[in-house]
Image (cartoon, protein in one colour):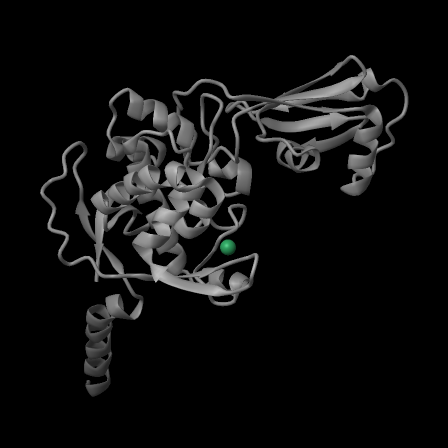
Length: 325
Ligand SMILES: [Zn+2]
């Protein structure tokens, strides 16, 4: 009997204490689309982010809001709309908060929560470095707009099923976004393919047959590229989201994702033709294609869509909440 009482006591104690044990929890207050709801943000705690600077190996400490400003400065084009900046502020904050709660991720950069490598975590540039690189006249106005966007969305994160969502994003898409499963091999319910209303941003990359041979060798692809170059590309298989699933070159099958790495392509949405002695790759969009497309979000913002509706469009089935202690 005493043992059972002890177990019940421990369970109740854990239920009471656990939120502080695991750090911050989402309080579940869903924010409505459109308005600011006159939110009471007095309970939003100050969060400190530890950022690993890849070029120097140092770990910098800063407030979450300062960190998010630096991410926007590095990731979002300066001519983008304010609502796009606000959507990106919420996405970057959520991404970082999720990493802060995930101890395993930190091992990859010596216990720091995040690093400044966009291909691993998120891009980041300090305002001091931006001033040095691009000059005061270019940065001051843009940075104050970023600060406003970050401040106006303070404490807002994207939640799914009681936890903070993995709010990945990319620069531009090809009319539709890609689902997580096609890129990382596992399903994430809120990272599914959605329509992305944006113009095609095309990029051309060309390689001579000899350069193709070198790229294959460098990337360890065992492929005998013999005969006429115009016959090397045998077929391209695309998925429903207009990304290359598989490309067959001289009998060797390569996934679209791997082809993107080998040929340094902006996205997995591409076509390739042999023209005037060169292989011409034409890509649409930039990035992995999963989650929010910044270019698509900006087109929605230009059409008068608010940042909350933009976020709920790209992260299907999620909700926006305020985090609290
Ligand atoms: Zn990292």
